[in-house]
Length: 295
Image (cartoon, rainbow, N blue to C red; front, side, top):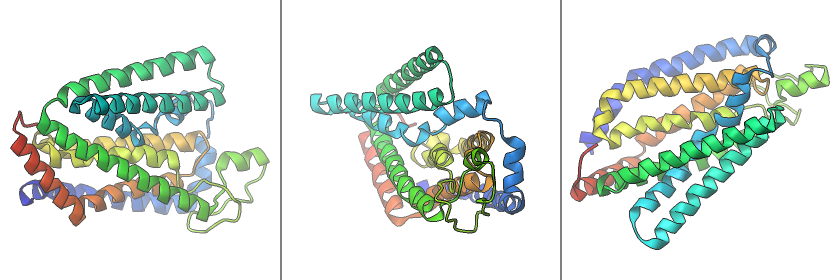
């Protein structure tokens, strides 16, 4: 196990430390400027914010399509039919919810239809390409482990984030703005009786599922030199999700920071769990025994 885990964890240590120090600095700023930042950034007609609202949360649910691709490549008519059904169900659910977001923001119906069709086409091409790569047993074993891990993280995210929303009850910026008063505003460290669902940001947490990609170098040796680049890319995407949620008025800076920190911490903790390390070692051993081209 040490051959795989040590090479992955060592280069990640300092980026992780710097990342959370940066998050701490932002939390300090949020403690004072949460409301002022939203008032300054609020732009509900921003195309960037509208399109991010509709699509930035996809990373949390794409692993279901990934599992479908694994089943499609595994062979056996029953498994392939289940894989095809799962891919179609995922595509239909994702595009339906995205269309609802776009329509709510008064995006023209024809534009919504075109975007949803394009999104389904891109997803279909991605699944088809992935299925071809997954025909190799060693790759399929590792990807099966990875997509299941992603799904478990999504389930944990759904439970924890929604429980926090229920407990905190923080009012949203746009709802207070529509009511003409910010009297219900509370700082992020206080529980609120407003009955809102602003803290933490569910959209941002879903988008930050991309941090799970930081676990790929442990499964695919060729990616180990790109570990820092993957982490940087995930951080940039998280920042884009957070800024869009603030711009559209659905969340405060602290709401989004909490989600970013939670998802980064979740992935970091999972990568250090003994059960994860044992399972990773088992999968890598089975993949090596299966032979094939290393990736």
